[in-house]
Image (cartoon, rainbow, N blue to C red; front, side, top):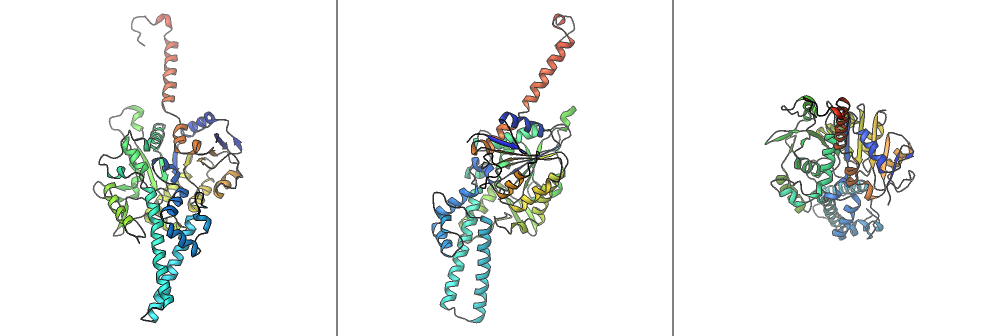
Length: 434
């Protein structure tokens, strides 16, 4: 599919025009990314549709059971092109049934010492439902693991590993584009994986993710108000940017809650915990991940996630801000609401990379939330599409301007200035050095 992009109600001519637009946006006071599941595909992650394909392939009996009991339709498990159900609604319906059947079992236990045949059947259904819910959660976690060797490597992800090449490029370009006195870039993500952390560590970029501590890292939101500086630098370099801010809006595979506090653990230790979770057939939860369900809006009002969402809303409300969305499928209505509300900020710019966008704002295959944004025809909203070849994270990495372009312009300006001050016939004069 060919490249397509639209700004407001006007189509952009080509990628060069898009790159120029992005170059101007990176000069704004505040710059941020919102990454969804699609942004981690190149690193081994799965989109929601790919995740569902994996579930119905590996858990055939569970998918058949859900069809028989009315939780999904037959076409949802018909390969090779199943109709992907709404994950949030599906898990909500499973949890509602789980709660109701558990209540019926408790009532039956209070009324008699022996189960009737119907009660035994109910217990069997209850156990099956628990296993199916656990299987779904294990599939979600599996999609966020990326590569096993990254978890177990004592030196982290190497810079020659192409799996995170785009993430590294994007982070380097965002940081290098910051001007003296401007704040560090923000990265907001709905992903549980460690792609951003590993990419930043591989290029020695500091990550401020809300946790402070050396051996014991405890969530301390005031860390988002701190920044790094180079004490050896002189001039404008003293105001350079040496870190990014990372807000994992749905939690992380490396978080755990203990005694009312939230801690971050190392990747190898977290991997042990994840392995135990994956081996437990009836496991229902892991750390502070917010599983894909409609009720996760309630999960986000807690201390940690509530603070991260507050920072997200605060970022979009700041003057002269730009938020770039990549790999986000607009499936989280609580995030969609914040984005729509943020458009009341007259200086907010949105750039959306959507692999499903073909240039038609009225395409019914697009997520309703994205169609709503397109219908506004707001010149502050740019949508980039054209299929996966033009709208995934690799394209974003290529479209962002290289800071060396600015350096070359400055060198050319300096050469022109020197030629003006010292004409060619004076270059050999004593005491003049170019």
